[in-house]
Image (cartoon, rainbow, N blue to C red; front, side, top):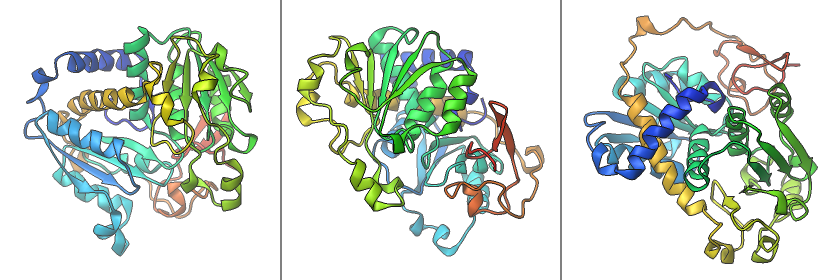
Length: 355
């Protein structure tokens, strides 16, 4: 594995090997304090972040490495109009691994085309968030002993929920998973995710109510309604606060159900739920740091590619994708990448169906 752009690109064997390393780090973190000594991570955060940014920084520091980058693109040459390609070409001269979060879907894939070092997708708009999925899988496996055969409820903004999309892709690698997709109709999963689930023979059903299905769940994955993803503020006002998990609602849940949340929360989980032993979202965040330690160890120690080693990249002239959030809408030099999802031609960056 050279980059981590989409969890779907990782094989089950690669995940199992990575999880073994994660477990070793959790059990004896002091044994890993020098494995990245002399290595440097460049963290480019074009969007606000607390857990992902801090945990990636902490992960590299705990491995003995160092970190540079920005948490505000306006403090860099991005504010002067520098392209993503040029930014990546420059920072990959200085770093051993690049970690990036942006509001543009497909941006990490775009960066990987030009980087001399591995690229990690720390969230690309409402598209994917594979390292959050590593935290999710680590939490479930450590606390339940495995993933196969689980009934999982995904609740909230499933349209823009990049953590949800990545988790669905990851679960295709396991057996007998059942999904209850709980959302208002206008925030349902994108069609390319439905196509993916059908293509992989995954069991799922879409519902609008949380309480009727909660007794069946082994894992409840709550997500916030993401104000920053809405173009129409009226639509946000109509949907905010639609799902709120309370202690009363948990009375009908299984005693060993896990409550996960990628955080931050707004109002979708009441504070008194924090004291319920089934609420593991803060522990989930800690597991995420250990998962990122294992990933950084694997990627930052790989050999650097020289320019002659990078595959040639076609120069584009205009976007073939009509998704307004796709990275190709602003970076027109990107090649017109196309891939098949369920037999449908889709954008090779953001997965949206091409019209």
